[in-house]
Length: 198
Image 1: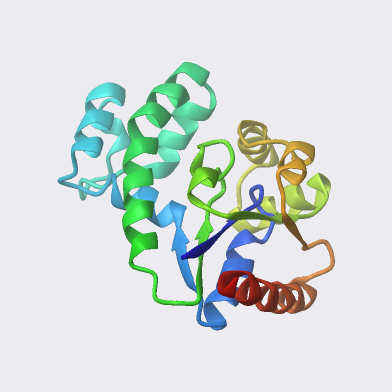
Image 2 (image 1 turned 90 degrees about the vertical axis):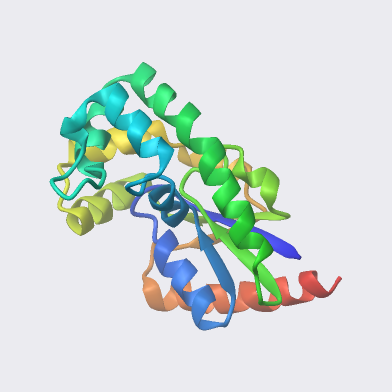
């Protein structure tokens, strides 16, 4: 099974690109989805997180309060490291299982931390959705209604633009808009179909 890792910083348009691949009938595994699955109520990871950070990281219904947890870990590197050490292996297992169930000509692994987490080892090529950091900040702030400072912290925790591009086999330029992004995805789709055959 030919696999492509799709990545990009926060606000890059990675999810939009993944959606266009889905429209073309391609199986997309979303690492963020896998990250949500492993912390569902009843899963051991959620119990460990609540024990470590306290029950204030849980919502009234017992689910993880992701915003609360994000605020705690992005201000403390050692806490983020603890969380990543717990979750990354579990997320990886979930991703592998889902990739193995792929039904299309090739599969996409959509992951904001594809390179940082080592998930790139699960794919044959890396496709980066790219745009200038100023535009990334603007789009992420308006989309998530987050304060620009919070977005900057998230961006700082992710691989910087230059290093991400250096790892890319393919680049989708999302600086113009979604119509242009869609046509670039369609062109890459044809390329990936050929690569999957060979």
